[in-house]
Image 1 (cartoon, rainbow, N blue to C red):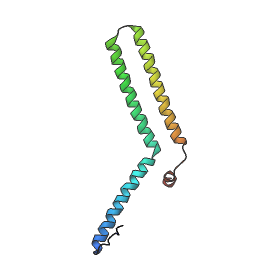
Image 2: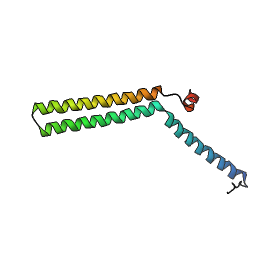
Image 3: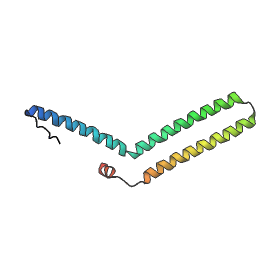
Length: 111
């Protein structure tokens, strides 16, 4: 094992302490960001919403390109609507579950 060496000069010691404090501050901020469930759930929901919108636009483009038959349009539109509804319900379930999760120590301290 190695032993930490104490700097001989007080200014050097102060500089190391300041550097350590800055590193700890960054670590605490990163941990606080990870425990912000509401913000993380919102980000996940926004990402899911963006993917669903992109899939919907793609599906509409494919429908207009591949077929002019109204029966095909109805079938694809129904499937797209069902997928969209399932995605929204899934995202809502995740948000609800995260809100009902027991509070962590960090969340208790923040209040």
